[in-house]
Length: 108
Image (tube, rainbow, N blue to C red; front, top):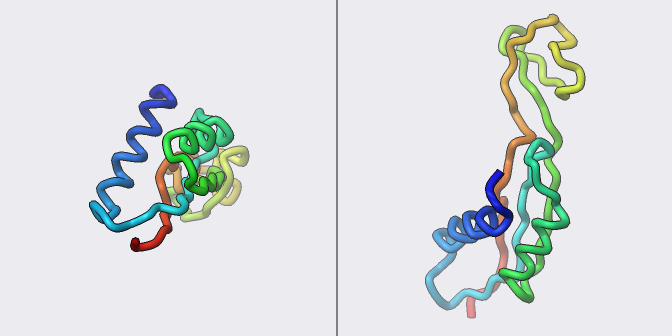
């Protein structure tokens, strides 16, 4: 896993691309953090708060979920292999996210 500082900078670079270049005050962000990402939500929130003083930081933990490629069932990884058909062919649906899901603020 990248350093926490590198992760924060990458998240903020993507955010900057989406915000107007001027005339906008950022009030808050919501970050989706997948359960399989080796990062503490508290540490991430603290690092983001340090980088964005005065901005509300909300971290939403996204639980892991697998999708069976044979029968189409969705199930948590602790039930692997597929509890419906027994297949080991699966892909991750959720749990690997690390992204700013939304941002809010005001035009100034």
